[in-house]
Amino acid sequence: MIRDLIKKNRSYRRFYEDETIEPETLMELIDLARLSASAANLQPLKYILSHDPATNALIFPRLSWAGYLKGAGTPPRGERPSAYIIILGDTEISKTFWCDHGIAAQSILLGATEMGLGGCMIGAIDRDGLRRDLNIPSRYKILLAIALGKPKETVIIETVGKDGDIKYWRDTEGRHHVPKRKLDELILNLSYDRSAL
Picture 1: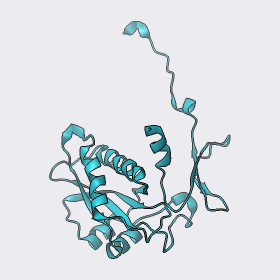
Picture 2 (picture 1 turned 90 degrees about the vertical axis):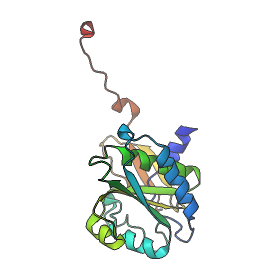
Picture 3 (picture 1 turned 120 degrees about the vertical axis):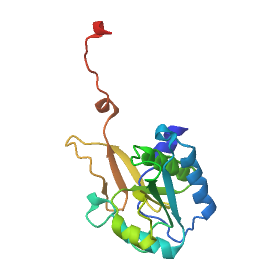
Picture 4 (picture 1 turned 180 degrees about the horizontal axis):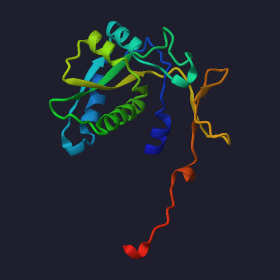
């Protein structure tokens, strides 16, 4: 059921680093992104795949992890991702990428979740450093990074409290809590003049 898959698809930041992800698995995930919607069907996205420790070590320090956790969000050695997908926009195809990279990233993460993996979509990237380290040509805009691995943490969805605080947090047992607004808070019931229709 898609609802169960979405609930299980959390932003994981702790992984079993020694659990490898094969290149074929990453290719399957990119194929899901390839099959997903694209604005005007331009398909301007390109991908860099990393599953080896040397390349992963170049990518890891260029990403910022879990800003609300004040340093505790960065995975320690042994709990870092075992693979990454870097999503790029090819400016020779389009100058604007609209929401394509968000759609692609969600498809990738849902596919990873179905495979028993987990991941985290990261937009806080040292783009200049990553471009230099991975020798990314200037025609490609760095849009997102997706960290992937076998999750080593529990993520709990809960309702936003009365104080309205939406910041995620970790309890003393290391469980990651993610407050979500109630459904009825998200739906706007606007009044408008129906006679104008």
